[in-house]
Image (cartoon, rainbow, N blue to C red; front, side, top):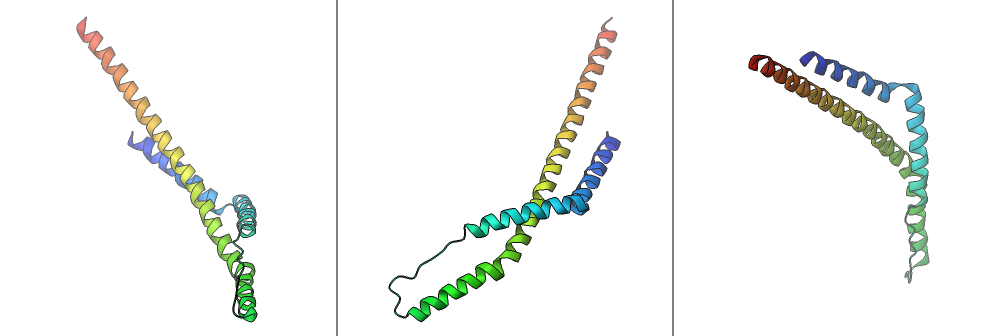
Length: 125
């Protein structure tokens, strides 16, 4: 049983390393991150200054907003989304590992139950 768990954990670690370091996965994750980044920046909040005492101040606020949205946010959002996608992939691999462990435990429990029934039947004869 312990050897089976060791093998399952090793397979998880290998799959996790491949998911985070392989060039194909990196390209796919980058492509998906850029798509999600564009969507997020497209949905950015636009504000309008109504009844501003000074139009120059309203223009300055719009300038700061545009600079933040166009220059500062894209690389930050892209990195956050890439990290989130990587964590989602690791989470999926962890869930798969847990399912495999539970299947192994279930199979082992069924095997123990079957062997104890067979032993009990042979002892009764």
